[in-house]
Each structure stands twice: as C-alpha cells, then as structure tokens.
Length: 152
Ligand code: ADP
Image 1: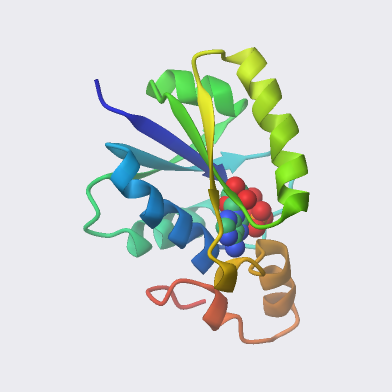
Image 2: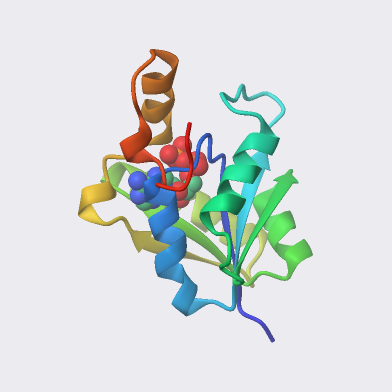
C-alpha cells in the first residue's frame, strides 16, 4: 500500500516555506498531494488556476508530488484519496496551538488518519502568505519569499 500524505492549504501564493515542507517530507512518503482548499466565502488574491499552475511548476519533474483542489472537509478529501497522513508545517508556538486543535479534532473525525508536523527551517519561519499578499497588494517585491521558479 502506498503511503500518502495530503498537504492542505490555500497557497495564495505558494511560498518558499510551503515548498520546503513538501520537499523535506518527500523521503517519508510515496506520494504527497498538495491540496488547494476551496472556501467559497474566502476572497483570494490569485485565481485557483494560477495557484495550481504555480505549484505544478515548482514541483515539475517530481513524480511523488501531485497537485489537487478540494472543497469541504480535509478529512473527507484524505479518505477519498486514501491518504493516511495530513502534513502541516509549524513556524511558531502560535502555529502549534492552532494546529493542535485542528489535528485533534480531525483525529476524532477520522481516527485512521494522523497529522504529521514538520518544523519550519529557521530562515523560512517568518514567511507567511498573508504578509506576502500584503506586500504584493502594496506594490512591493515579494519575489524573495516565493519559489525561484515562479514569477509573480
Ligand atoms: P498560510 O498559513 O501561510 O496562509 P496556508 O494556509 O497555505 O498558508 O498553509 C499551508 C500549510 O503550510 C500550513 O501547515 C502552514 O503552517 C504551512 N506553512 C505556511 N508557511 C510556512 C512556512 N514559512 N514554513 C513552514 N510551514 C509553513
């Protein structure tokens, strides 16, 4: 049986922080699905197609990485994909507190699925999609925070 992890997020846009978590997780899993969650009530900066295309470009040639989109509960998506793990990145204690509740509630919803946390590399732990979007909206240059292969 394949060991599959889902890495859920909005990736608006994908950052070097996200990229690093996925690359470092690759030795642990047979497949990592970068899953773009669609929340109808959320306003995104970039279109779903654009975000999906960028993620595809970043992991081009990396056979273990798949890019998908999903609506609804992350646990339902994991079950549909037969993923045994959810992958999440941790930058700070604030991330940890937030992620702990989600992971524990997800565990109650889907006891067979575990959340695996990977600590951010120190040099990437300040990178945050919300701040990247603010820089872009205000005309700043956010290119140092996003993967080298994408041009904003
Ligand atoms: P954000 O939290 O920046 O808005 P997402 O909602 O797309 O981004 O988050 C997807 C996952 O990526 C979460 O597990 C989040 O903790 C993780 N992540 C985001 N930025 C980083 C980073 N700089 N280093 C490590 N993990 C990160």
